[in-house]
Image (tube, rainbow, N blue to C red; front, top):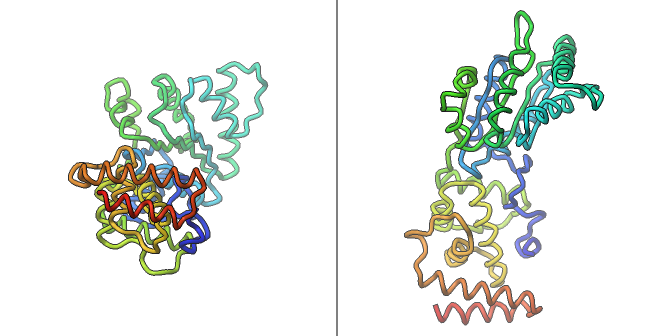
Amino acid sequence: MYLQHFGLSQFPFTLTPNTEFFFGLAPHVEALQVLQTAIETGEGFIKVTGEVGTGKTLVCRKLLSDLPTQYYCAYLPNPYLTPVELRWAVANELKVDAPGDTNQQQLTLLIQKRLMELHQKGYHVILVLDEAQSLPDDSIEALRLFTNLETESSKLLQVVLFGQQELDERLSTAKFRQLRQRITFSYHLRPLSWDEVQAYMLHRLKVAGYQGNNLFTEADVKFLAKAARGIPRLVNILAHKSLLLCFGEGAKQVSIKHCRGAVIDTEDVELQSVVSNRYKWGWLLALLVAIAAVVSGIQQDCCSDLLARMRDLI
C-alpha cells in the first residue's frame, strides 16, 4: 500500500499488540509498575482492567516478556473455559504429565505436586489470564480455589487478571466477595490525552522507519484523539486510514480532510461536533470512488483527479 510512498519499513498502526511498538505512556508504565510490585509480594490476585482498546493485551505481553528468570508463567489468552477445561489448561501450561482419563481430583493433586516441584526449584509461579471478563462464574470460583494451594509460608500460585470493565462489575457482586477480598492490587487503564496520542503516534512512525517531517499536524492529532476518545486501538485505525487517503491523493503530508474521511469510515468513534453532514456524505462518496478506482485498476493520477472532483462537489 503506502509503505514505499512514506518511506516506511512496516505498517506503523497495526492492531496486533506488538511489544516492539511499546511506548512508555503514563497509564501503561503505571500499570506495569503496579504489576511488578504486586508480583514481588507473591500473594493474592492482581487485576488490570480498562475499556476495549486501551492496551491491556499489550501491557500483558510486555509483562510476560520482561519477567525475570525466576518466574514461571502460565498464560491463558482465552479463558472462556469450564472449570474442567480450566484445570486442564493450567495443567498443560505447567507441563503436568497427566493421562487423558485422569479425574478432576487427581488432576488437582497433580497440579499441586507440579507447583511444589517448581517452588522447590526456586520458581515463583504466575497464572496470567487475558480477557478475564469471559470467565464463567463457576470457573472464577475454580480459579479462586487454585490460590488455596500453598506451603506454610507462601502461596504456590499467583493469579493476574486482565479484563474489560465488565470484570469489575461482575466481581462487585456478593457472590464473588471471597475472591474480591483476595485482590491485593488493581489498576484501571485510562484513555490517552491528546498530547499522549501525539507522542504515541510519533513513536510508532519512528519504529516503523519514518524519517521525514511530521506527517500529522498538531490539529490533526487533536482531531483524531477527540474522535478516538483517547483509545489507542481507535487511534491506530484512524491514523492508518488517514495515511491511506493521503496516499490515494499522492500527498506527502496528512491533512485534516484525510482525518475527517478516516473518522467517517470508522465505527465506534466520536462523530458529534467532529464531522458535519456535509463532509460525511461527501467523503463517503469520495471513498467509494477511490475504492472503485483501485478495484478497476485505474492509475493513481486518475484516482487523485477523481478525488479532487469529488472535493469540489463537497
